[in-house]
Structures are given as C-alpha cells and as structure tokens.
Length: 196
Image 1: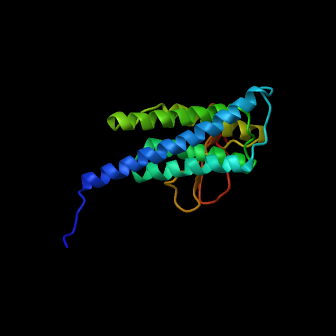
Image 2: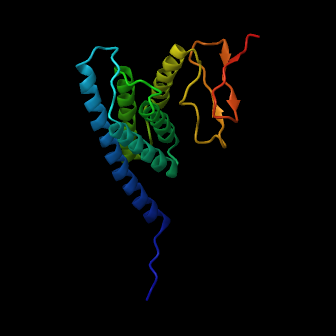
C-alpha cells in the first residue's frame, strides 16, 4: 500500500475552497436576516426600537463568529477585524445592551455588504478590499452613541482578539478629546479625565 501525500498548494486550495463556500453561506444568512429586519424598520418610525427574536440575533451572532474564525485561520486580518466588530454588535443586541434601531440594522447591512465584497474580491484575485476602516468607525459610533446617552465615553467594540486575558481597550468617541483611551486588565470600562 502506498501513502498518498497532498502538497501544500493542494491543501491550501482545498481550505480556500471550503472557506469560500462557508463564508458565502454565512454572508447570505446575515443578509437574509438583516434584510428581514430592514423591512420591519421600514414600517416603523425612524427612531423606533424593535425587540428582535433571540434566535434571530443568535443566528446572526453565530454566522459572524464563524466568519471571524475562518478569516483568522486564513490570516485575513481586515475581515477578521470587521467580523469581530460586527459580532460585538449582535452580542450587545442580544444581551439588550444595544437597542436595535434602524441605524443599527443599516450599519450591520453595510458591514455585511463590505464582507461580501471582500469575499468576492478574494474569489477573483486573492486580495481583500472594502472600506473596512469606515465601516468599523460606523460600528464604533453605534456604541459611542449608546454610551454617550448613558454618560460613558467608551465602546463595547474595543476588546480585540490580540488582547491578553481580560484586557480591554476603552475607546473614546470621535471629537471627545477630554477623555483618553485606557488599556486595563479588568472587564470594566474606565473613563479618565485627561485635563486634570
């Protein structure tokens, strides 16, 4: 009996093919759910908050979590960063920390469109593209607005995969120069007045 070996190129091609199939499925699931929510919000007042079914939020969270893991496995850092931020949106929404409004759905749809574009670009020429920084900023603004109404200048989207242990990086909403970002070894958010 002879051993069959698989070259690195064949293995990578196989993994990449699986990634493309799975990531496309996850993006389609996210689009379907978000378009359903967008349709709901079209029938409501612009500032309305909707209570979304827990299972629907869980499904979007799981799809985003899977995309994050797949992109991290392949070293697609822009995609991993964006999915991490989007995952935080769904996690905050399902734990009632972020009210689901039309703006939240709109930003999530923009993020998913960006992910879809990145996947399409990968399929065609192997390079990711998309305005990830702008979409991440929009996501951070969702959290900044939520916290500003509560009197806290930080973001739940700030914990990154690279942080060690329970580290957290608190971020400051744009234009709020009175407060500085603080990295801490706690799971609490700190607000530091840097003018004193």
